[in-house]
Length: 227
Ligand SMILES: Nc1ncnc2c1ncn2[C@@H]1O[C@H](COP(=O)(O)OP(=O)(O)O)[C@@H](O)[C@H]1O
Ligand SMILES: [Mg+2]
Image (cartoon, rainbow, N blue to C red; front, top):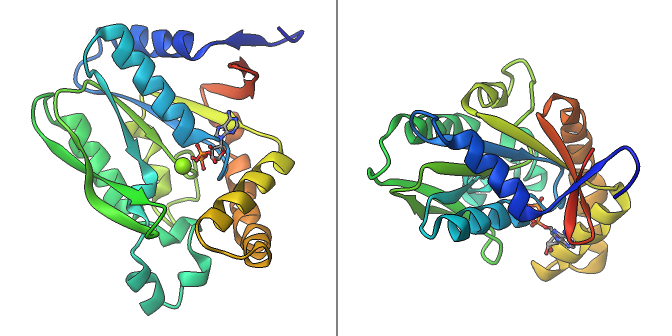
């Protein structure tokens, strides 16, 4: 343990969520925010898997914000393809509406949720279907963005029962994002340009939301550190 901070395992994080969700009426929504490449999707899947393992049944599922990327055709038509990933290149209103539906519907009622395919670089309608799950782990860059309604993200926060911010040093996200873009088909040079001109400015917007989260986490070896 580092002085002044507490280390917590994935299983302990999941136990915290389960405790908070118990006694909650309707579906409980955990929101995980953080800059691109922070490891949000990885953490969300980890928490989901720990919750389901401990319960012995599927009580949790992930609802990625990334499923609400506008399609490449929509972005191209608006001349925004090069800005893909910025706050207004997602359907924030659609995300908010479906999150509301998920909260309002009884477990057992099917709610299809879109995912994002990193091979074809497009959203996949109904990529995951919520059914009996009572815990929703939603994750994405802009969950805590309060931009005074310009892009619609400020409507998200009231729909989250608990919020975590996943913090990560800039050099690490830079490396991870360059690698991710190269895996997605970009040359090293194109990957570096995308990171410098798009991902890092987006990370800057997200980093300003850090102080508004209920819990700030950093990966520390096999565990996480509460900051
Ligand atoms: N704790 C971690 N340690 C090392 N690499 C990680 C960790 N979490 C995620 N990664 C890697 O970093 C990249 C980004 O992770 P991801 O979960 O997709 O981030 P995000 O959803 O925040 O963009 C992926 O290649 C993933 O395998
Ligand atoms: Mg992700």
